[in-house]
Length: 153
Image 1 (cartoon, rainbow, N blue to C red):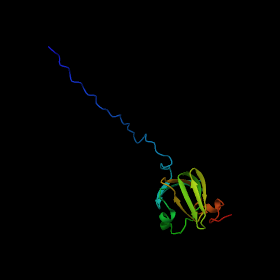
Image 2 (cartoon, rainbow, N blue to C red):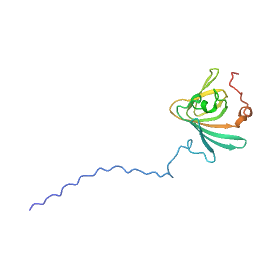
Image 3 (cartoon, rainbow, N blue to C red):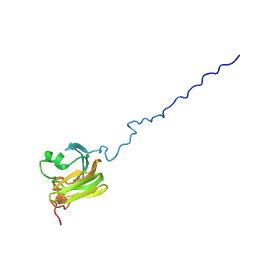
Image 4 (tube, rainbow, N blue to C red):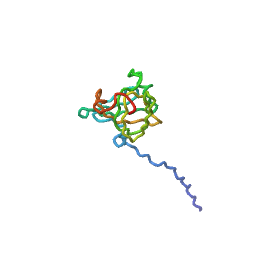
């Protein structure tokens, strides 16, 4: 009597197990995460979060790739140029600033910025810009000793 050999079992191809990440353990980019205690709003495609710090405001602004002030904000604000002073820390991205007199300034993160009123500006590249800004609302220019409009010293 001959014994029959049992057929060989084929090895099953196994996929590596995928790790499931719960929402609680998911890591978010802190530069883009909601700011605790801040007022949130979107204006002209800019995500803005504002909080009080003494007499000043601290703002986190996220400008999307492709943003340009003259295209996205001019229709909302109604002025030809941005008439706000911007003082703060550019945490991510790159911005191009152009003043009415043709003066051009480029800022690339990480960098401290001081931008005079009377400018157009846009995001350079495909990365959003994250700007942490400090202001005193309508008193920013005078309280920070900035010119009321860009001029060459």
